[in-house]
Amino acid sequence: MFLALLELRAARGRFLLMGSVVVLVAALVGIVSGFTTGLGDDTISALRRLPASQFVFSSDARSDQFARSLLDERTAAAWRKDADTDMTPLGVSITRGTTNRGAEVDLAAFGVEPESFLSPSVTQGDDLADASADSIVMSAGLADEGVRVGDTLVIDRLGIKLHVIGLTERSGYGHVPAAYVPLRTWQRIRFSAPGSQASAATEIPDQFSALALRTPAKVSTADLDERHSTTTLTKEKAYEAAPGYTGERVTMNSIQVFLYLIAPLVVGAFFAVWTVQRQPELALLRALGASRRRLLAHTVLQAALVVVLGTVAGAVLAGAVGLLVGEQVPFSLPATTLAVTMCTVAAVGLAGTALTLRRVTAADPLTMLGANR
Amino acid sequence: MSLELTGVTVAFGHADARTTVFDGLDVTFEPGRMTALVGPSGSGKSTLLAVAGALLRPTAGQVLLDGEDFAGLSDARRAKVRRERIGYMFQSGNLLSGLTAVEQLLAAAYISGERPRAHRSRAEEALTGVGLGHRLRHRPEQLSGGERQRVALARALFLSPKLLLVDEPTAAVDRSQAGELAELLAERTRRDGCVTVVATHDPAVAEAADRVVDMAELSVTGASAGLSGR
Image 1 (cartoon, each protein chain N blue to C red):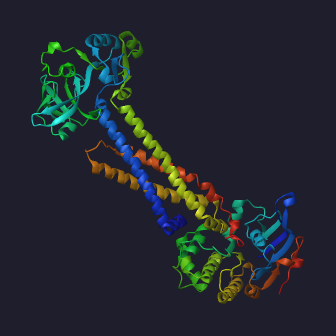
Image 2 (tube, rainbow over the protein chains, first blue to last red; image 1 turned 120 degrees about the vertical axis):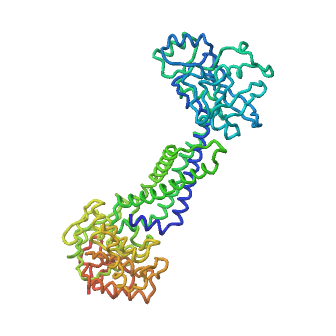
């Protein structure tokens, strides 16, 4: 420890340079991780919040199921009869509207039965349970865009008027803030023709995007799917049905993986150069009787200090970036995500230094003699 | 307490490419006496230091320090012998860069498993003892060649070694300082009672030594008959 710290002090310029690189790599990984989580939240947090374990879609919808799948009450009744579990219809579609105060917003309309387990709990105002059919509960993201409880929201081109009665937690679907309406209202939004000024409930088909199962079906869903021409997905698998989710995940995760590959190479390259440069000093230490184990411990300690301190500083920087961008961009870096990400950066960084350890122990004390130096 | 090399053979390479530096060398070095190894380059001075200093395992023979043979020990055990019983002063590059003179000595204490901070005042005394009381906080690049070698000498003697091995101590030192350094080496050897072996080309060092061994007169089959002494 003593000698490792003395060397760190003596070569503080080099270690500061290396530490800065580690800080930047860690911050970059943290920021990418924040965007990965933020974009993920923006895309599927409304699905994640639904208290459902599985979703049943029509079998003809093989991708973007929430947009493409349509089920009817007949299928729902058949499933209810066979599955022996609590289930409720769910409608999901993206639309846009304008409030009476002029705020133009995009929203992901989630159609739910007001009395069902999918009906959202509110943090302000009233929930859908006892509300009229033209009520809407919006998530916090819409409040950021200027929508208030008590406002009237008119769905563009359809002219459907909705009264904002409550506010629920921040959630989104397909990068659009979620809002919850009674299923019948959702069907009007989904199936009305633009300009029709639809209001007659009788003209609207009684269909919805999916059936949400509160707990997994007690019988084989494969059998039920085959029998009722449906496709059942777990909630996690259903995230892939959200628009853009898979593409975003692959892109962001690829960036992270590449950073995880780059980090050990950068750190390893620095320590390789550092080790080569101090071969004469390592030889001197060996000649003075330092054991290989001590030299290894000495080098690992130096690397650990640089990598860990650099990673911690990088984490602080990533967190600061998160605070700075605030709600303006989809950035989310919970403490656990940050901790896991930074531990991984530190681990791969230290793995990089491990590549150079053989050179540390290979220093030959005999080179100290004669005119070798 | 003496250093005794018995039947030491050192050879490198195999078959036709085999080079034999020593073949059955017997030589003894007495405590409290400084022995200068002299001779042309390639005559085996450094090899003798390497074998005596547990840096090189001889092909055959014994190297006895205080009657204990360390020639056949493992690499780790020979490192232990080096840090506990032998002090070294090399031709150049003796000092760790960026460390002050005091820290050079504390680093040696640390390598030997001692708590460095407990030795700070003793390190300062040791440096004062070699005339560097005014250079305690100086780093290698702030010291002259002679001062660097004095720091190396203070470090070599810091843990009271039984054996002090010195390789060309005056190679990077000007003439006026070379004589002083040689006298200092001889004086500390007598005072501390250690076995001191110095490989040198410098007549000033040979002049200060208690005994001179001419390596050129040591035949490869050679033995103590090749020694000249005073």
